[in-house]
Length: 73
Image (cartoon, rainbow, N blue to C red; front, side, top):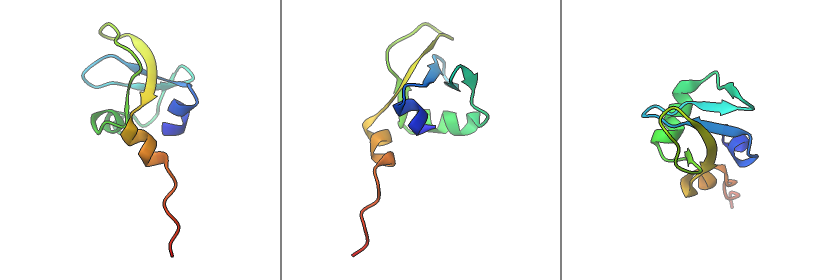
């Protein structure tokens, strides 16, 4: 889901429980989509009206979650 956000293919609904859409289709795991939003990994790219779909954006925490783990020494 995070990679779809990076690719510009994701939208969030503006609501207290933001739903995630990828390529215009609701994600099948909305529980995870809600968790990503509530944990601060994704956010709306800009303000929208209640219920509107707006582009999704990664937060700094979302970018960090996608970063490769350091190699073991």
